[in-house]
View 1: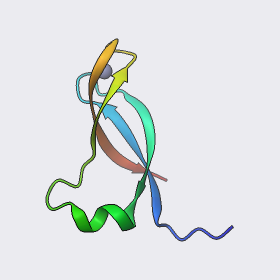
View 2 (view 1 turned 60 degrees about the vertical axis):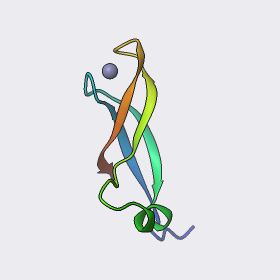
View 3 (view 1 turned 90 degrees about the vertical axis):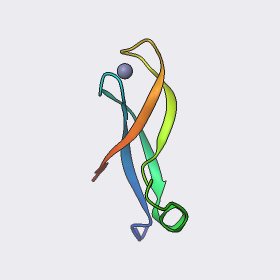
Length: 63
Ligand SMILES: [Zn+2]
């Protein structure tokens, strides 16, 4: 299987406790064009450390 590097893994960290709870795939091809300025993903997800739904932000890309 050939990897073209169009997709990359990014971690999602809780904006409250900063723990990385999720890893998601980001598609560079789709996302690069649309977003001006705010290229960071922000998703509301359940944080098991906070025990509630919090805002999760994209963090450094995983290799
Ligand atoms: Zn949290």
